[in-house]
Length: 307
Image (tube, rainbow, N blue to C red; front, side, top):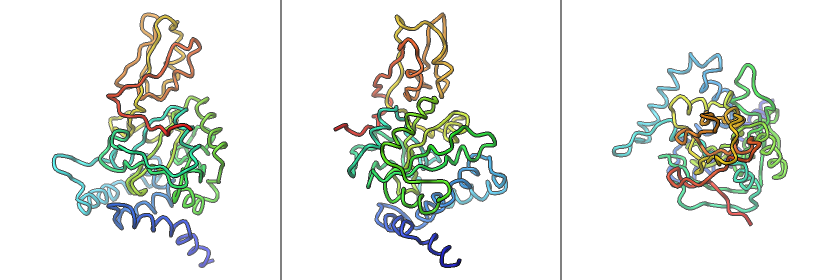
């Protein structure tokens, strides 16, 4: 039994994660351990973060103190800049087509100019290592809710060493899938009106590691974003309304996960400041009166070139 526990604690995927951590620029031992804890116990970690876990209130002061200690140890205060929680853990909104391309990649990729795609001070490298290694796991945000949205298995872990790490430690909550199965999960979640987010975390080697399919009722990041913590970056698109086609039916208003739409004088009206360019509303419009349009001021899309 002891050997089995030890094998899970320091199994091949865990050793690979720490090897990658040693090579990651600027990665500290504290961060590597933080990444291990986050990947090893995500349901506890996120349950506490969302306040849904019974231990949340008891551990909140400790978590706050650890965050301050980490900031002091790492010197996370560049001149004139204050590092926030949103800088260390955040998501990039992606329309369905872009998310689908991301899980179909068959070769390692490093995208240039990540700061134009992910406008945060930390965790902004876009590196895909063995991107065809894919694992789907039960969503920690949904798992923390008393009455979660279903299905649970909608979080896609993309590439190494993350996919093998999750598969190694969460045999009851995760499984290996093919790129086609990942596409089918994305399409099914899109049909449910859920938004796709590429997530980054500083302790996860400071780079992209997962695509989450998020519902506004369960997702902790969407809740935080809606309450003023800017945890999500725009897709780089905004939605536009074709006034000639719109009939003011309100289907888009009900569908928008960010509350960016309303019907005024018989036409859909978009709050561009609130619109994150997820494309959910466009897929729900029976008149095809909505479409995404590039908005350079909202950053560059996270898109993998096709072909």
